[in-house]
Amino acid sequence: MSKMSDTIMRHGKAQRIALTLNGRERSGHCEPRELLSDFIRHELGATGTHVGCEHGVCGACTVQVDGVAARSCLMLAVQADGRHIDTVEGLAPDQTLGDLQQAFQRHHALQCGFCTAGILMSCADYLRRVPDPSEEQVREMLSGHICRCTGYTPIVAAVLDVAARRRAEASTEEVEHA
Ligand code: FES
Ligand code: FES
Image (cartoon, rainbow, N blue to C red; front, side):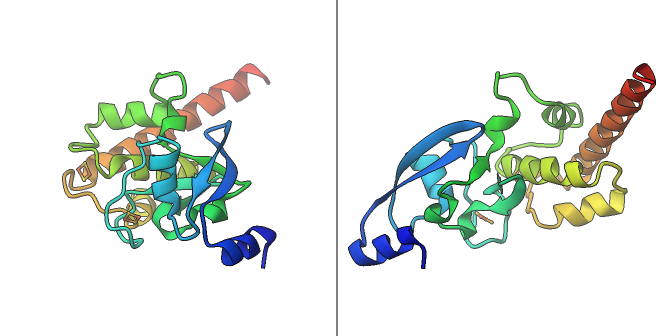
């Protein structure tokens, strides 16, 4: 048992944890059984992360933990102590939409937007690992997210579009540096 877990078990009260949120060091207090999703939203004020089902099904609460997409409703806040957490706010740190968000805008890949933050965080992680996905692969990746509005087709188009643009940019840079 970690030192923090031991302390929590003995005292059963709010604990101070520190983490890096979107590149900035942050800290706050959480109850031992508080979900990471609630801590991010209520203690750190990063309300871009949405909460839907709260049991790992809808994907709305997806963030990145140390660079890997994870459902923040399935993780305790204390488990994030010392970790790097990225949320949708980090995709546009200077209020300028990133390329993935711009692709969603171009393809009308959102309507109510409730699912969008989680989908963007999954896509951002996925495209780092799979820069040239097929439509089938993108649809499989999206199967971990529930969107009640779009029918998914414009989301798939946006992901394929941004992947193609990134590959084109990368090959142009390679030619310029050859
Ligand atoms: S709120 Fe976390 S998966 Fe639905
Ligand atoms: S845009 Fe409404 S749930 Fe996806």
